[in-house]
Image (tube, rainbow, N blue to C red; front, side, top):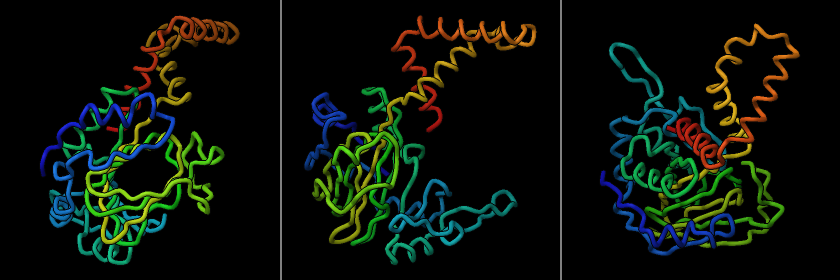
Length: 288
């Protein structure tokens, strides 16, 4: 496998700058060299060697997920039979029937993808995860859906036709399948080297056209209100040692009053940038 070059600064500025971020989608044609990223030959070698283990990969066909045992096998690991390793022949049979191969958390095991993810996290207050979708001709892995994140997609091989459903009443904060796919607002095709940005919660789906399609997707997740509250509680538990570890010495009314006062003081004095960093640290740790 090769090592990816970082995304050009001019490209990320156009895709992720203030004029586009969270406002509208954008397609940059022939913006990167796909040869510098993961290829289908790389993936074939990994599958043939059975180096990937579920859940680092899965199969999808129009939103349906086959039984894991139908495309995995057991291997002998230090004298023990361990399930979940890739069965390349079984995966090939599923793909011949129209199933897409989805590789999860690609940055955990592919250096070039990890480099881009880290670059994006240095640029933006987001936690980044990475996926590859290998989709057979005229197939789609996922039904029309929303991601609870911004999306950056790089077409690596083949062509993929994207459909967006970006009416205001369809865009939402949470992930979901409750999408009216009868009237797409945008239809376009990505070819190798093209890069797409989608704002948070924009419904979409995609179909491989004219042959197999391979694309790399990054989800860019900003801290939600829940993430910020979790970060506040994390700071509270770290800083209020006596209250947290000796609460039993206080009568319940006093305990309630102290917790309320401590939380109010924590919110009043917590620096916003530090609060965001704490939330992002937790989110990024959870990813990888």
